[in-house]
Image (cartoon, rainbow, N blue to C red):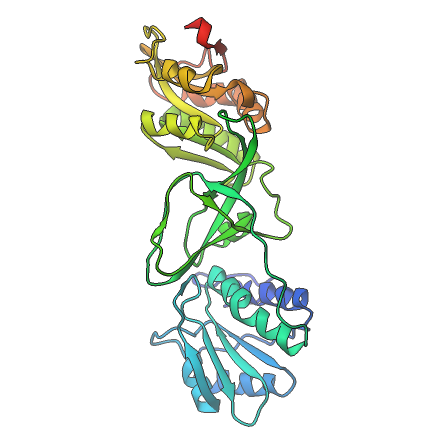
Length: 371
């Protein structure tokens, strides 16, 4: 572990957790003092905790709170006082440790070393403790925002799980109203990029095994997040051509702001018809008659007017995006249309065997009377 600004050698990582936690302390109203990094040796960790306890009300010991051979926080706290809690039924943040120091007022908190776990430990335990010490009482109840899940989210029933989300604004073709659709970001306590991309957090309580796609939820928004300004959700097939489109779009926006759910035709069509995605990616047969047996014809019967945007052509089929007329000029679709017409996309298609990009970006309107 090395301080920020150090030149890293193989096997070394930067200490970003102390910066994050110090910022969260100050946002809560406290004053943070960051001490030098202590080696993973019990005597040196104990000396650092005692030194911190001379001037601090709360001592955060970052990493080492789990139960592995090299984890010493619990041993140190028991030597200096006692542990009250070691491990909680939540994810991320399970290895958190809470204790007391003999002869000292300070409360030691063992903070897990993975960034997402460290953030949850502060939010769920340290923040409320600081507000109590500052005589600010309990924090105001965090109000969730109404949204629907864009895909199924599973969870273990024996613990509380906190799932990080991106949010997208999507027009429901059934009602014409815009609503928020939430997409889970990759899970993992060490996913630092995921933390940066998070716009809201959903708690799945112990006893629940998750939520189905389309479920109405109340996630807690993250202060300062971009909040649904650039997230695009597409359901349907994946192919070398769609991967090229996705890669180019992600080069323009933060990774994670374009979410492609690989569904079969029926599930993808259902997602579009119920307002859970901006567009559907399908393979269009050039000889299709547009009837209800054709997936595009079936979508027209459910959502009304659509625009079919060609991605690339191969043999007797084309990879296409199907967009409801109500969403055609929305920001996410406008951005995708610009990529499809770009020279960069044409060049990328040349690297995909069997694809022709001559008609990439071509837009065709389809309506109930045009079948």
